[in-house]
Length: 191
Image 1: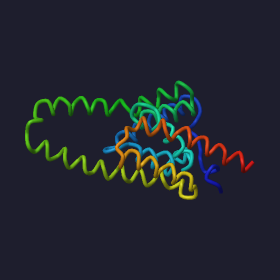
Image 2 (image 1 turned 45 degrees about the horizontal axis):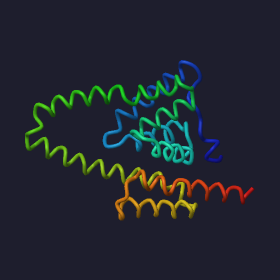
Image 3 (image 1 turned 90 degrees about the vertical axis):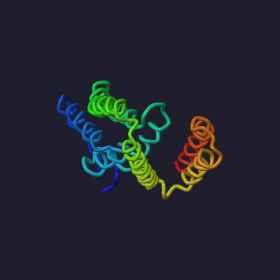
Image 4 (image 1 turned 45 degrees about the vertical axis):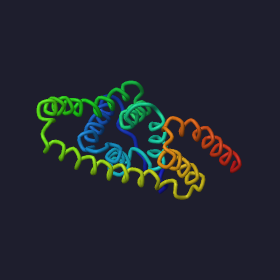
């Protein structure tokens, strides 16, 4: 069975909207340090609503857009499944509870943020978040293993941002048109 055949979709109608809301609610509640890793687990591995390649391509698009990746991803996936209602259901699931938690923690930080223990907790949390980001990077690179062109553009993006310290927007504007053109040309040659 191919990767594309494994992918399924949420149910139709209101049940499908509830499925989307609950899936993204679970993702947002699990996603401490970054929800994309949990989105991959929930949508690709557990529910099989997406293939590895579809997840990677959708995430790539969402990373190109301004705003938080998981919010963009939820709206893109929800819209693809159930139109505007699906986008709103997935968006609601991904932001409602974290927004409430954020507001509560913000109030606590305003009151106790000056304490040394709070700074220690935040330092430890940032180290864990960095580990999550590395994990996500390795996972989304997986489907590109067999594509040398992906390695070339991925390396160019790494050099531009990490080594040369160019802003993300400049790197995207420089590399995106070329990568799209190269992939389009390669696929046209195969036909």
